[in-house]
Length: 230
Figure 1 (tube, rainbow, N blue to C red):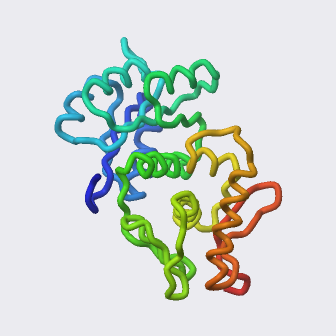
Figure 2: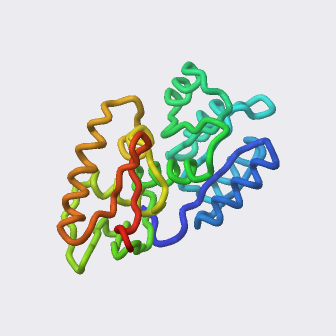
Figure 3: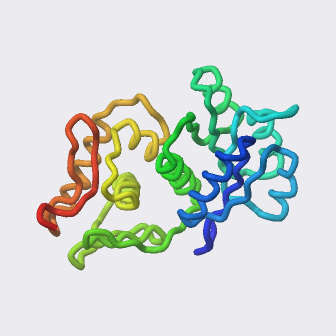
């Protein structure tokens, strides 16, 4: 596991405009980024930059596409891989997971979605240790996986804590049940009741020490925002 240093991301994307825009967003979010237009510099990147995660575009120029690059990358390092592609065909998504993908983001995507997925994969792989952050009087320490409200420690399960991290890092953003399933459990299309059960349990623990912070947006999902009048 890394220390308190910023996670290092290797980003391979042949479109220069998208490569630059995403790189800026990732760096603004606190990541160190090495961006490459293709797989030519991968060996050097692994040997000198030591990435914690790779974000690979599937449609790359030359002899290697993103899937080929992932296979080669796996011979050099065991870092998690997130694929980014314009192709939403189920066979391509399945091929991505077969070659070791940890997640899959389809273009066009919101930068916030990519950031959330990258953080989720880093957390699941034990490579993300973030500083403490505070929001609406709620103190969340990702390094020690603890949370406090009203001066009291919240006794959260692993899943409840992971949900809280996602909601608190992007306070004010509404997350659908499908998004939370994917970000916390790592899969989609499962029973929505799974999310409801854990959100309800998390709410009870939070509300034992103050007013409601996790709100339901009917037909949309869940959001962490200040109490009414807060």
